[in-house]
Length: 123
Image 1 (cartoon, rainbow, N blue to C red):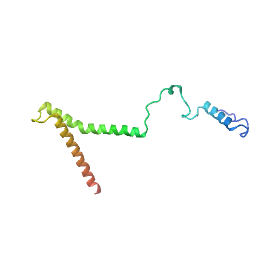
Image 2 (image 1 turned 30 degrees about the vertical axis):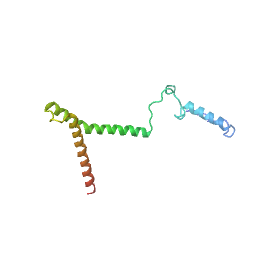
Image 3 (image 1 turned 90 degrees about the vertical axis):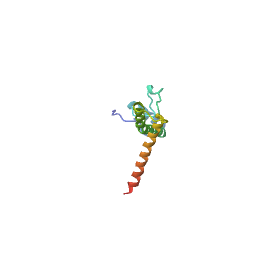
Image 4 (image 1 turned 135 degrees about the vertical axis):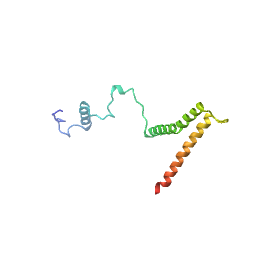
């Protein structure tokens, strides 16, 4: 840190623009210029992937939706594939119908559990 005074003349003798320029020059030498004004040469060509909070909200919502869909759909898919390999299906039944039926059962069971939680919430 320098021990010399900030300005060798009195504060009112220099015009404001010159004082501002000297101040910014001192700050640039010290490296305390704000990040918004400072540009690094390596960052000039690269902007990066930027989204606002609404964009990230959409991305996060899609991730949660995909995870929930995988949790709901994966067990019936695996069970129906296993049944197809081991015992097979009745006439008129297929893997697709089995999967749809399994997913509908899981969604119905989750709906019933949520309803039960809401009914018992006041007790």
